[in-house]
Image (cartoon, rainbow, N blue to C red):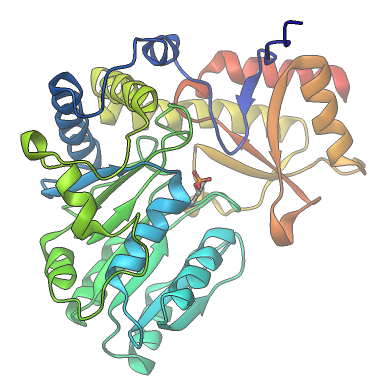
Length: 371
Ligand SMILES: *Cc1c(COP(=O)(O)O)cnc(C)c1O
């Protein structure tokens, strides 16, 4: 008997990720497999590295892609930079700051938490205060685009404070990368990670990462081995060493094809054009949502264009039912709230390929019919 094949429905992805992938990216995944040490594959990985440097706006030599999703990029940064007994400052204004604390504590570090209400961003004065209590942390970590709340964290002033203290600045750029301005070298970010399934519009499962020279020095001066074998950069970095590449693990070959194509598409469009497109489509979405009675939870100055966190119009009791209706009847996925915001808000993503006025029209049209 023949086993049935799996035929996913054709969705319009407007949640917190994954976003829609370009047909060119999906086609790349259908290319024939080659060995991950094949000279053609190694050459392609070199191009991926160079395109990740261009999209992060960095010249960092230690720039690579972790063969696992964004959370593994987060873990890569923390397990490599922290050793038992180290102190660090982690800012929490949503789900993902909390995840960083969890990992850092598992590294044996002492974590000083800077907590801010959800929907807001960490202020410079809060960092100043934290640095008084913990003047020489190994690192200070923040989430640039908090996907659970839709808040965009300003980084430049905080970066200066962190470096004056002699610490490293670590940034989660999973949702901001290729969607809003992000300048790794200019903002002196020392350790950064992202994901592929948000504004890059590639399938989930890979995490672009980059370390500054300052961070590399910290790696070189470690006293203890990194607790994770898979994520230990002293081993991983040889895997990204071009022609000298040696076996570490088997790269997810087809996913790297997809990433290569997605990065090419970003560079063809141009980063600045891409940032502007997210801003423009956000404006159009915002106008339509507000007309229907949706309210944004983040104040305008800190609002992400690509992740729109909104309260539903008054009178709607069962948001989950409404989301299910959008999915079943209109093939549109939007996100519900996470953690403290569960059942209270929607998270409407317009990321990468999902950031078009057609997407907005489809969603708005569907909502008008349902409501
Ligand atoms: C999605 C996301 C992550 C986690 O990425 P995964 O690919 O789901 O592991 C981490 N941080 C932020 C801000 C995210 O939006």
